[in-house]
Image (cartoon, rainbow, N blue to C red; front, side, top):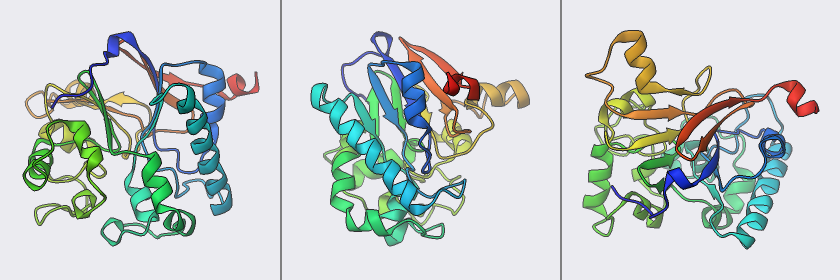
Length: 261
């Protein structure tokens, strides 16, 4: 897979995992300051902390308004990716896996949401997506859509069953098969079935802290033969985010006292 001609070594990127209705992204931006790119990995709705539907919708509107304002002056500076919860909230039957509590607003504004979001972002050898891209799923997509020549061409594909948690008869309900799409594959399977030459930045699977999954598996379980791909998992507690500073991956914790200041 190839991507844009941008180079990671020339950029500072602030990456947000699944926000699930949380508004702390605004505080983080105030604390961290300017970045060349801001990347959100999807799953903007379906609260994990009992945030009301109204507050989630308000937060989503504020995020998209801010992104519009930023991109007005520097197009593409804020990238909003799509997650499985977002697809479910839009009302797609093939995305249903959780109770659909927060679909009313997005279902009515499907075109608006799809216009502002995309499936994947690739910069140099780093691929950002909600869950990751396996070799098998990418090959299946290329067979179905011959115009795909690189990862970012997937952004031209309309939502379909290929992005659902059962994208083929070989997929499973857990996200562990090599045919799982970029919205559903789990980091362990991505390590095994992904592209070894790619560095992945994903959300989707909750971790205690941001971690490079391959390195962790090798250090803990000596699984070098199995864990072939570098996978950074960013779905963590709401006050931990990934900064990629000119090629250096920096998991960043921001404390309560930092917000107060």
